[in-house]
Length: 406
Image 1 (spheres, rainbow, N blue to C red):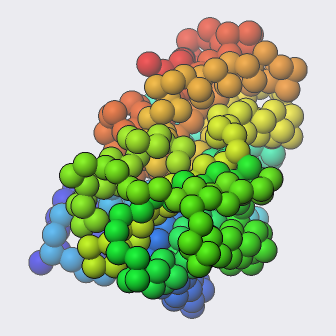
Image 2 (cartoon, one colour):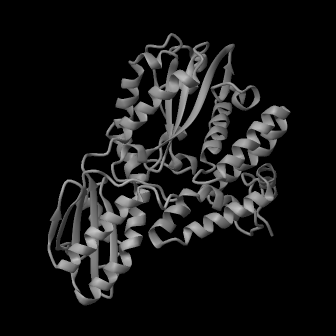
Image 3 (cartoon, one colour):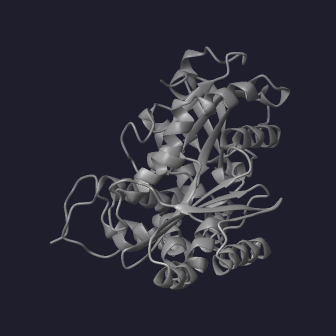
């Protein structure tokens, strides 16, 4: 028997979304994701996380005899809203929607931008705003037109990857760790023990999970430098591109099979370190890598704000930039909020000429998209910062959408 949860739209409610994408294209996409997920244990896990929306939708399309998890319920609600949205659009608006959906299931793209758009619209409707999908319907540079008590506001939805602020990209790191893992297992078999390889990459390591050839030369070079150092039985190797140091792993009580090993390493090396663990029997080899400088995720986001605001806002109405921060995890997302990095860079952006039409900036991540609770996710489903210098900043009709959170 299928669940009758009132908050569960049912698996058939997801079929309009699949028809908009195209059943054949959807099957092709799911096969592609599953093939990519088999590329290696670390990169494969990251692929499944990156495409968790698509995988969740595909799972929910099948009849079930259980209640949905909170995250599944949120995904199902947004996915089910795509069908009525398409019906309400004009033919040209529906065409724009189907084009964006086709793009979303191609290459390294995901459904996140469209889910962010629809989720933002649903939140604003719940706050009492009438919402028009003006970007789809009218081809405006902004995405949504809000109206409440005779006041209008433009909303531009955008997705920014945290990778832009990292010297070492997580996608490239996962591919490096998978690539070198067999060599490390072979080496551990003849050198049993517990080892820690500290790695600094002043020139960075870049590339995505989908792009095996992106910056592939650097990845190959780092791989060769590590294996060369192990073959020569040296403990250090360094130049302007890489610094390697091999030491005993000294973490009392942390066994390879202990689920607490990575958290212990994280506490030891901090949230910016990239970590990997290879085992062979009782032997353990840990790699801990850093870029040559601290991550600048919030700074990269501020730069993005400055680039898109003049392009997406018309200046005819108050503008809201609704930013989705992709490729971040619980620890990093909490840190960006608790250290006030997002707030600091958002408020700095608001002092620039590019922000003259922006009344507020909002931020959300996958943690909010999947309905997680505090402290991992932000309250109210987003973080908001109002621009006190905008003439409409104090207008009561806009307050639910622009008042600073927290």
